[in-house]
Each structure stands twice: as structure tokens, then as C-alpha cells.
Image 1 (cartoon, rainbow, N blue to C red):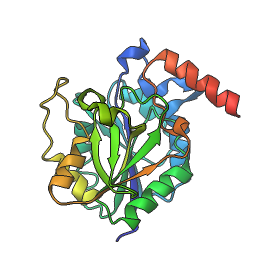
Image 2: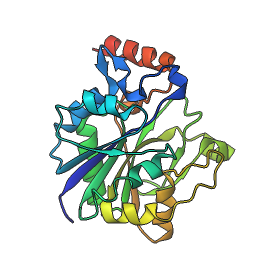
Image 3: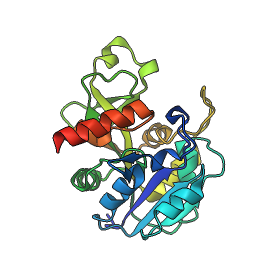
Length: 247
């Protein structure tokens, strides 16, 4: 397998629940924008290419990140995470390697966890590898269904579709993935938007890959705080408090 590595950071969202006119990823923790915290981690990895997808007030995000060696790609209409990643197709058309997809509003992913994600991905010769976490209260999150005693991912079941047996599972999908680049863009061609939001979801690529006989894997972040995303000012304040408490 090739050792080339790249990353795509999703930073196009407005974050309606933030009740602010600032792009979601530019909200700060300890006076540092969320996306800057994540980008500083990205620079510790040996990446061959780094792309940031911008949308809502994207000029502000680009301005914040001028000191990073990255490509910026626009998502003009916010039509979901799958649609966002698809905008980078031209940029990655000749890239033969592994691509990390991470959200710009999940700031505390560690370089060790990302390296472990790449490692499990390579070891399993997977088409996609999901980063998971274990939450005491997994309500609202997609649950991870693994092949027993293995790193093989069988399914991601959304909370609203989960049976009582599945709801007991505390391992959740963090929304951070590694993909074989060619497999990723092939699967993105096949996803639909037949859902309540009428959006194209990146997670739908997992089912498509599996249906095509491709292997998907999963590895768990050692600290759940690493996958904590921010959807509201309350969550932002709570995460800031927790980070400062654990310093």
C-alpha cells in the first residue's frame, strides 16, 4: 500500500445554533479559533497535501489560515458533508494514497490518535476507517457495530434508526475518517440525498463501500474529549472549561 497521506478539513458551515454571524470554526477556545487548534495539529503530521473546505464567510477562514500551507476549496451551497468532500475531487484526482477527513469544529484531535487511525487503516488494508469514541451517554450519535473482537466495522447505525439492542452500544461514530482516496471519490459519486435534510452525507460512503465488497475498519480514540464537536455556545463553554480543568 502507498504511504502518501493527505487531509481534508470541513470548514464550510455557518453553525446556526451558535447564534452568531461568525463562521463556526472561527469561534475560539482560550482565545484561539477552533480551526487553528486543529490545523496546528495537522502540521505535526507528515502530510503530502492539506485542503480546507470553506463556505459561509469563507474569506474570513482563509484569512485566519494564511500562515498554513494548505489549499482552499469552496463549497458554494451547504449540501452536506459528502457534497463538501466532493468539491475537492479535482484537487485529489491524481492522488494515490490515504485521505483523512476531519471537521474543523472538532479541535482537540491529537496527532497520536490520527497516526493511530492511519496505522489501523493500513494494517487492515481498509477502504475506509472510522475513528470512534466511547461516551457514557451516546444519545444522538451513530453507534458503531463491530465484528466481534476485531477492528472491522460492520455498520454505523444512526440513533434514530437504532433498535434497543443497538442503543445499548456506547461506542459512537466521531465523524472523522480515513479513506483510500480512489475508493472515496468513487463512493461519493453514488451517494444520494434521500433523507430529511436532503443532504449528501459522508457516512453513506461506508455502506456503499461495504456493498461493493470493500473492507471498513474502526479504531477508538483513547480520550472522548478528542472527538467532542461544537454545535452551540453552551458546548463551546463546556469544552473550554473541561480543557482548562484538565490542563
